[in-house]
Length: 367
Image: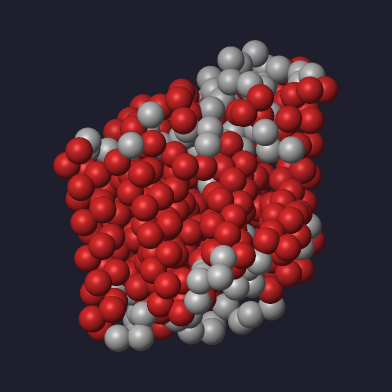
């Protein structure tokens, strides 16, 4: 495993993922289950912020996802054709396996946790007993598409990540199957990716009913791809061209219709494109902790909802009206989720994923 102290070429990735991941855990703790209601008088404004605006942190992961996916699929416009059509099925299967191993484990834990929670407490947020079609749809990450309820909080994002990866891989495979080479290949890659980013930001992302499909989110994801191309550009003028293109796309989208989710995605993507923080973020004393939180984030987000069900059920059974016990339950859920994320990262996630910079997948409401 890579040493946590190794200097990263883009340290902002780890910092953004580490901070956003903790926000999303607390976001879910604020919107699901009965514990938040009892502790709300302690800090109502903070808890209200965590319950709503904090969910926009999903945009951080969308942008980071595109940035990291571009490393293997389209490291630069001129190298966009390195994935042939013949490799596409194996790439998609590999991606599903990497996502599915911890996903399926925690999906089972969520079903068991919901059963325990239904036994010990009555709460509207607790999932009902699943049907077999619902189990199958969730296992295949198709629940939203086929109209089945999710079995765990926010697992829609795992399905969307798979779709987005498949979409980018499909574009790369089409370019690889073409006879374009050199400048023509690079131009075609820019037109395809930037064109789909523009279509998403200016049109598809404004259609609420489209939020179960990858193109709805490709504006943010594709900005991550463009940010990677900016970082890899050989000269200042080329980097400036990419940064300008990204800024124009985001500003045009916000002029057409203001969306805070797109504004945040644009800020994150441009921060990546400028590689902000390079040279000092990865030299701070917190860097080892930040890298660790970044690496375990997928496991943390998969595990925290089943844990919250069990903890909330226990707190409700013991002293449902106790402010102190409910506060202890929230903090305990957070700490137990970190421990569970570390366990999943070490023993369940595929070795190939652990050896690389893992993608983080937040589990939150659509934003």
